[in-house]
Amino acid sequence: MRRHWLLGLLMLGVLCVSCSAARGADFQAGLEAYQRGDYANAIKEWRPLADAGDAPAQYRLAGMYSGGQGLPQDIPEALKWYRLAAEQGLADAQYMLGVTYQMGGRGVPADYSEALKWYRMAAEKGFANAQYAMGLAYQSGTPPGGSSGAPGLTPDLAQAAKWFGMAAEQGHAEAQFNLGVLYAGLRNSSSQHFPEDYSEAIRWYQKAAEQGVAQAQFNLARMFQHGVGVSPDPAAAIKWYEMAFDFGLVAAGFDLGGIHEYGRGVPADRKEASKWYEAAAAARDAASSLWVQAEAGDVQAQVDLAFKYLGGQGIAQNYEAAASWLEKAAARNNSQAAFALGVLYSSGKGVDQDAPLAAKWIGEAATRGNVPAQLWAAAERGNPQSQFNLGLLFLAGKDVPASREQALAWLQRAAEQKFAPAQFQVAILNHQRQNFAEALKWYRLSADQGFAEAEANLGTLYASGQGVPQDFAAAESWYRKAAGQGIAGAQFNLGMMYVQGVGLAQDFVQAYGWFLLASDQGMEHAVIAKKQLAESLSPAQLDQAASWVNKWRAGKPAASKP
Image (cartoon, rainbow, N blue to C red):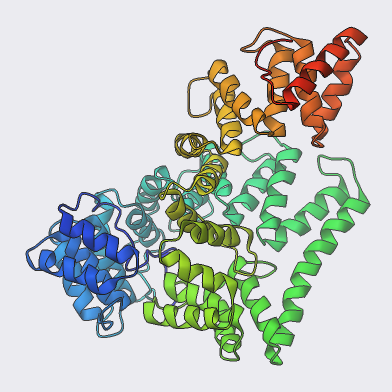
């Protein structure tokens, strides 16, 4: 199989992005049937619309032919329907037409000129994945999936930056990283030069790093360490090196060892240096040891090695190598391998996307009692609890390959069904990426259902002014709701508002009471704050605080002063 240049191909049958304006109850009925896995009725609803020239229906029908969903897999037939929709200007279809020509095979010859033509059309309509594809094409001059001798584009770093920039502005993590690389001058050569701008490199690296791109975290750490485009900041360098190491970049561990060994911006600490050197060496050696065991036929070693390739843990991330090892283990009835292999076939990472093979391997894993595979089946049927649980497994990498992409996809599906815990998790993921508008939206939807953690975090957004105008009254209201449900962080934050007199009249007795409630749950900051505040309160005030806390615990309101 050829190595694809395009990172993160869309699933061939997923919900289209720009065709949400599809008209009519028939299309919606087809969509509902598709989402519950009833492909026969989806086809029944969509085919007449497609025959009548409805572009979104044509796009959907193409995806079903491409993925073999309810129909025999037929790539030439998929190409026909993608083209019909694409010629009507549907960006989703234009992009998938580019993907189909890029990949070639199964009755469709690879045609790089056609792939670029359709990518460009979709990119000009604002389709982020297509913009990223165009950026890669201009960066290397190598056509999708092809060699340097195939007809492609003349390398042009300015054009690459233009397209990466468009995708990056839409939050495309790999585009953000590649834009950072260009601004850092790392693609410059004797024949190609892009003006260096280290402040821009840092800005885009940081956006990609916050989305979990390990190489962006590593590059950012080096810039902070060496003061490239920014004043040297050892603390920031260490932070990003540690994150990169946690995301599987072994080199970051060795750099951390060097920082602590030689005291580069921090006091020299041989013990701390040894810790990082040993951790990095262990990660590297563990991968080597696993490879030997896997080659000898150890099934669990094959699975573990595949997972390391998937996560880039101790070795370079390599989906094709992961798929190869998973196939060996799955063939020997390992259900964990069968499920992971099914997920790869579902997403098209490391293997050609193949819905029937995905269903085969996930089904086999479920039959053998694999819990994630069983969750997948229930999640595909639309069960929000299963979608939520599956998302959490992918987020934690527990019994499945860690995948933020899969996690967010499943959590989003549960969130869209008004499942409050999933709405909260989707908000958290957006909050971590500093996408405050989306975080606010999902926190509010979850909080409106009384989900305590969402209430607390919504209070924090209002208190900090992240994504909303700063509003201490709103912050207090949401903190109080969460505090009433026993959230220690909200109780502590209310205490701080009373101490500082921010949004509330300063009241040390109320503050002490809230610190007391939070500290009783083991919150370290609250324990320290309570101890420090107690030194400035009289015995009578301490008794007063204890009295209202007891009333609060008995279920009486604590909104007013005692």
